[in-house]
Length: 539
Image (cartoon, rainbow, N blue to C red; front, top):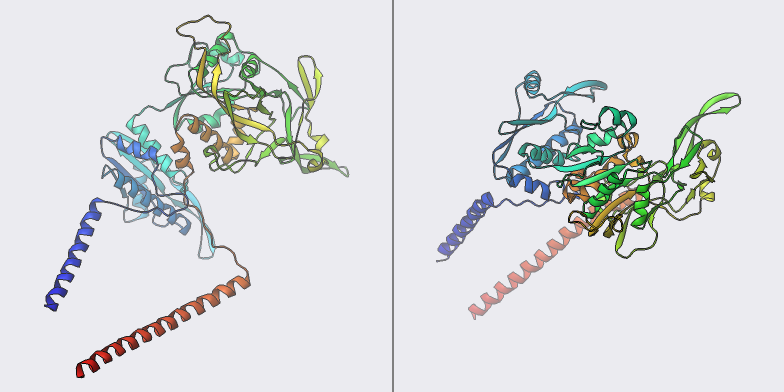
């Protein structure tokens, strides 16, 4: 009877194990314990995969002779695509192109238009250049797209998902860009598609991968399906129709980004001159004031200029307070994801001046608590300010600058009334107000500056994050900044190392001794119990 019970238990255990394995085939569960959620696909990816109506075939071109630091990149790519494949229930399939030789891989890569990448490899006590492949080809129906070089894990999910969105053909965000036309543009492009200005070429390249980005002159209303408007570098007053179209776009509850200087300033010019216009007047109508003064900060980055020392011109680096180094950033806001700091040029303070309770303010960028500001001397139609670097060469900013932090970029949202509410009569097409208006206002145009965006990844991340946030695409922020977090082993001093060493020796020994003692004690109790039973039966 006991033998039959034991056999039944074993059979039941085997049946349970088989059932668990069958269920696991259909219920794929994996826990992502990485600090950044590197293997957890975002909501935007889930929605994109759900819209697939055909099979996606991904071919990976990775060289076999990759150095160790790139092997982890290949592993991460494989694991991430496994998540795509599982979530899509087989609609997304991937394979490694794995020919016998590297020459055959080169032939296959050329056919797929995947370029090689030259990297330095330290091997056998020497450094050599090696051509490797780190690319991906994606085929969906008759469409074929490539990710030519996968350089790191950061933003890989964004690249793959964004490529899939392009291939599916779902509507991208439509972002309109307004910057006043130059005289040359006004003459040569009056009836043609307006070219993007050269001063935002880097930003144009950045945003065009995830949005339809078109320039407008605002002489006609923006299309209804426009998601966001960017207004940049307005110096002179706009025409009534241009300002009216900005006003009515705000009244639709659509987000508007305004990058607005208060001074014409140049590092090579000794004087900066303030200006005013009707766009600034419209902001003041909404209780938003861009102050006609330039912010100065003890936390700033340096210029290098030649200086005469003993009759010889030598390069000297020095702090320049009109170029703030923004570190006073809250990590609680999603727009600051992967933005520990950023840079700006010639910035002005932005704030609500009458504390309108119907309009709320979110401060995004602030200078340090060692700040100052200057508005210069009054001249005709404004102020004139000496910004030449020579006067700051030997100044101790920590002692001189005693103002609190200045806000230079904020988001404003809430109830907005039209700038034209008392001018234009009631009309079915005219919007007098909105209860969900939203404005991003920066007191500088430098945040879209080519040099800063190209040389400072944090500046680029901030601008893209703001756009994603205001167009309800916050998933893009998480995707673009997600990677495998580097978690190095904490450095320890000799005392800490000795302590851990002894702990590793003592604790296992104590555990073994305790186990032996408890085992001996239990065995003794068991023997005593058997002895009592035997004695009882003998009696």
